[in-house]
Image 1 (cartoon, rainbow, N blue to C red):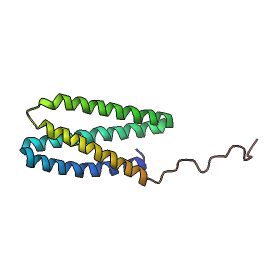
Image 2 (cartoon, rainbow, N blue to C red):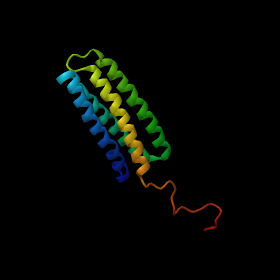
Image 3 (cartoon, rainbow, N blue to C red):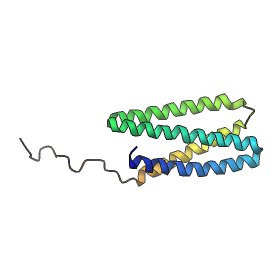
Image 4 (cartoon, helix red, strand yellow):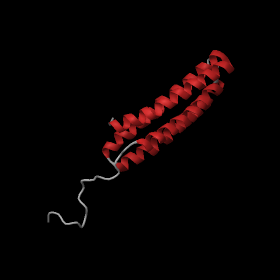
Length: 141
């Protein structure tokens, strides 16, 4: 991973973990240990899935910009489908509180997305290569 990718990852992980801790605390107050466990699992799922998405997009970005955009769209779609499947699968779980799991996933996904958007906005990344030759401006023939 490049330094920009690590800063972006950090910008998304930190607020997600902080929000996740708040959700775990609220779930513990409302539903006891089972609620806290469900919220912790939900927070962990979001952090792992979305971090893997950033790693995949980073790797694809080294291949080509077109591949990077494709990887971003595909990883997002796959993450959302898997998270929806997990929510459906765990709706009748008894080892932990499924509602706490669901709320943690929703709230942490929003926190991750906001953190990632904020991280992108703070990156000082060049959109063009300043040393690239300009077409029509002369040069070697």
